[in-house]
Amino acid sequence: MANPNALYYKGIDRILKGQTDIDTDTFKCVLVDLDDYALAVSGATNATPIVVTTSATHGLSTGDKVAICGVGGNTNANGVFSITVLSTTTFSVQDVRTGTDIAGSGSYTSGGYVIKVSIDEFLSDIPSGARVATSASLSGVAVSQGVVDWSDFSFSAVTGDASEAIVLYKDTGTASTSALVALYTNGTNLPVTPNGGDINVAWSNGASKAFRINN
Image (cartoon, rainbow, N blue to C red; front, side, top):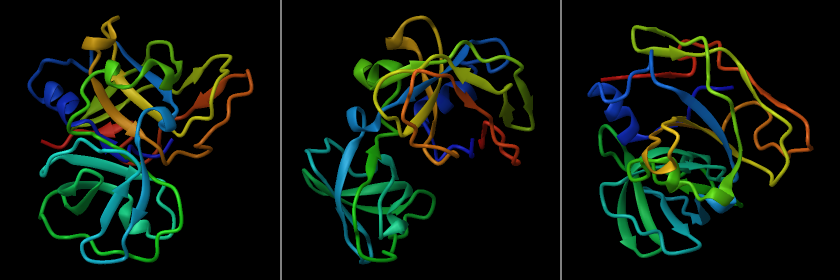
C-alpha cells in the first residue's frame, strides 16, 4: 500500500500529545466505500485558485483542511489542502503550509471525493454503511524516528460494496472514541470490489512505511 494521502489532524494530535500510544494501543484498518462517506466532487476549475464544487452542501468553514482524491483531468485538485469557502457547495484550495493558491492543471473530466480530515475525528464519523470490512488488530508495530510500521494484514472473506479507501484508526472497542489516524486511497488495486475472498494489504516499503509523524 502506498503512503497515506492524508493524516487525520485530530488523531495525529492525540499521538503527539501522548493521548494515543503507538506501541501499546490497539490499531485496526477499515475498508471504506467513499460513495457513502465522502463528499462527491462535481467540478474543479482549471484556474488559480482551483474552485471545487461539491454535489451536496459541504458544511465546511474557511481554514478547514480536506483531502481530495479521484478527480479526473484537473489532477492538481487531488491532495491535502486548506480551503476558502465561497458558497455552500464551492470552495477554493490553498497549500496547507504556505497558503498559496493551487493552480489548475487541466479541465475537469469526472469524479472526485472530499474527505474532511481536520474535522472527522472518530470511527463514528464514517457511517456504518460505508465500513465495508474491518481488519483484525494490527501486529508487529515498529516505530523509528517518527516512522510507524506494522506487519502486513488481511481483510478476511470480504463482501459488500466497491471500496476506494482504507482508514487506519486506534480501536477502543467503541466507534465514538476510536480515533481516526490515516487515510489511504492511492494503494495498488484501490478501488477494490469484494468477491467474498480475502483482501491482502501490504504496507509501503518506502521511507514513510505506514505513516510518518511530523511534529
